[in-house]
Length: 391
Image 1 (spheres, one colour):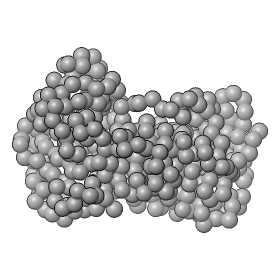
Image 2 (cartoon, one colour):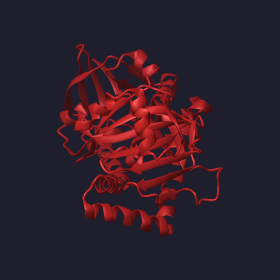
Image 3 (cartoon, one colour):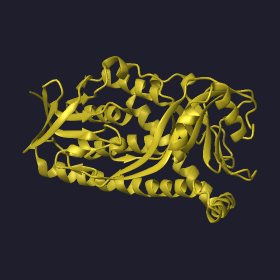
Image 4 (cartoon, helix red, strand yellow):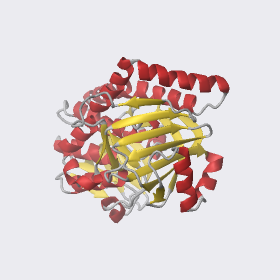
């Protein structure tokens, strides 16, 4: 049996950020993940591109992870354009800010962020990364929790942090339920090369039956194409040849970026949003997708994940240690309150947007067009969204 102050289950971005924050506070941290060590150190490209807010960038800079990214891995997001159906009318965010020096945000590959965070954590004192470690059982025992691993070992910690995906096994072991919203849709993602430059503009095309997003990457003529279709159609899209797929992307985007060629393999992800009923239990906290798993349309998932790690660390910083359960429980309660205040409106709002813009009935189509026009012509709405991204 080995002991540590904090055991973090899941070495994704939120888990690694949480480990780095906690170690800076002087806690001994053990990070457990079922993947092999080489996959954690050098993650394979999974097709996912993350839209980072300025707040997230500042947190990554504070941890030293941003400095491990090359300029060729960081794509400035200057503005976002949203269209509905075949209408040429376009809702624009960011075009009226009057400053190209401060983009709306940045697009960075999920694999690059994970690599950079892993490099920070692996070089930081007080952190031990345990790969090939699957948690099979968890037990609360007074002033600690015992984690049983698949290889027969046991890890004992004063605090366990679950960061093991939106379908968290640790959350289930703790008896914490979650609200799940299965959209019945899947996202097919892949990089494309276009004959025209994207100019840092993200395109969101809400079609009737499918949705296409084009995310601008660091190279001026490279974008990430995200096609969202009903899950029963996803395999058909995945089975398309590269030429058929890029032709579909060109048609769905009305050729806005010219001719299109494929630049990477495609990946398919089912879309399920998750909101845990509680973010903590006795000597246990949930961060990242284990707490809040978002639909990607508003690009807030990663940003809420790293924010949750920072919020938890801020509450732990008020403690003199983790042995006394009463102040720890109070700190976890404050963490939950703060993260709920930040995440709940965004979670609810995102789900409402998705439900509206994937509803193809006539009344919904009319409402979709009205929402775009009101948002475009009501400056405070655009300013509020711009502020949320650039604060």
